[in-house]
Length: 215
Image 1 (cartoon, rainbow, N blue to C red):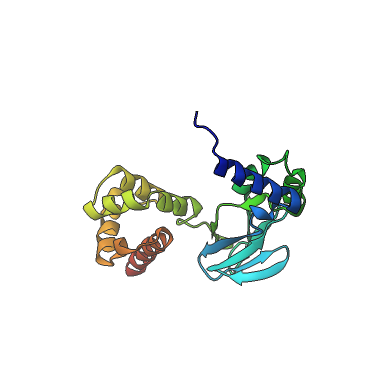
Image 2 (image 1 turned 90 degrees about the vertical axis):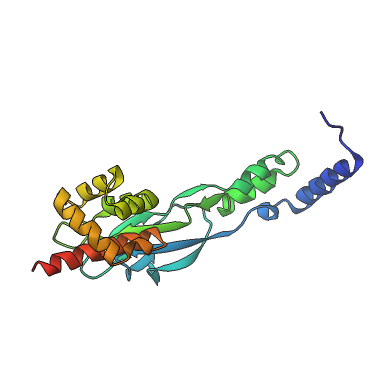
């Protein structure tokens, strides 16, 4: 075990004095979180506690608070969707807990003000369903594409693979139609998209084009 040096003791002493004198958590905790909000399709109005806060895609700064809340997505022609704003204990709060004996009001301030509750994840994408009809490109498909972005691109590029097979099954395509779809995906350069959500949108656009060709 390393010995505690004089500079170390001096630092601890200064830190303890600061905590005791301030008696607040703002030495360590943030008071707000920036969250990116999007939807598929884009262009949905988003409400928080009854107030319109933006239209997707956008970012919003949420003040940390003790009460749980949710986002409400609304777009003409689509079912309204509610998504919970997930919270977790902020990392800085754990740091504060280490100094409870020195400054008990530090943690108390975090709890009462809501600063101990950090918003996470910092990005949300809501899949909106068309009113009155089922949609092949549903939330399950969107989540699969986003979660398997890289391996799906590799399989589609070579025209085979388990990830591609599972994907084609999700969008209800026979092996023959899946190959036609794969060929068009490469022709339309959908594999060059950098963002996983944009990749999903590009794949969906290709499928729509193919269906329109057969009308």
